[in-house]
Image (cartoon, rainbow, N blue to C red; front, top):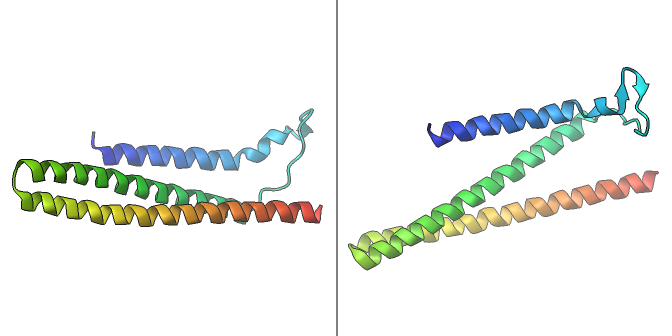
Length: 136
């Protein structure tokens, strides 16, 4: 089975489980209109906040996947380039090593974007916590 199909099926399964988790998260606090002992009733789910959380998690997952893919391709091109330079036509090895340098630059760029996105998410969460404590 081609890997693209397997990855696509796993991504769809993960997304559907994530959305199911979000959709059913309010149901745990109540059972048939009766409060569950020891559970605190939750406020209504904020749709805009849920959409932003899903969007942020998809963005971070996509950036992490791109970074890992570029890193793997850098390693493969580097190993192939060094091997070809040592064993046979050096021009082909030089091309592969040039490709490794290009993918390493892309890896660095995507890694920086991922780190910035993670910092922005943590700052946004911190600001939300501070706003909640300031209003209560």
